[in-house]
Length: 160
Image 1: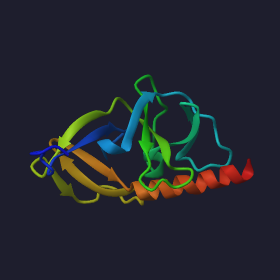
Image 2: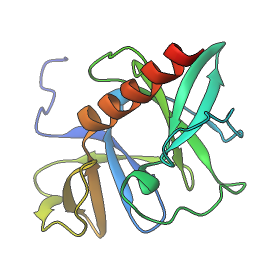
Image 3: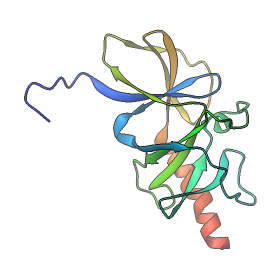
Image 4: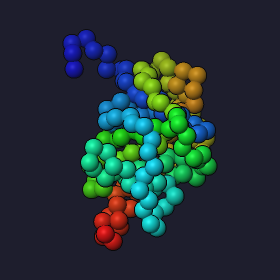
């Protein structure tokens, strides 16, 4: 932290999904990469899209839309994968990928441009909804997402 740094502002990524945009702290995003079809995982839930090889490591690939019970269109040429640094460092979810519907962009968030909104959708993987400038955004429950991914990956490891 540098002297005079404004701690009431944070850098975040605004991530395009289908119907919603997702807001993620900048520190959770390791990299944004082009979408490539993942290796399927037999018997995995629909939100677990498969295994993605990133820099020689196999990472679970997750769909926020599927986990929320929403329809997710097939990835097109604009789709990207966000490589996420897990918050909990749980085995199987220390890093993982989230599919986006376009290129995420950095935004500055402070108390002047964000306000809480009522839940627009009930889902265990959504912590909250907010209004950021002119956009409705969702704030994911990354602890829950990582626990779900760790559970699936434990089953994948056990059956391998």
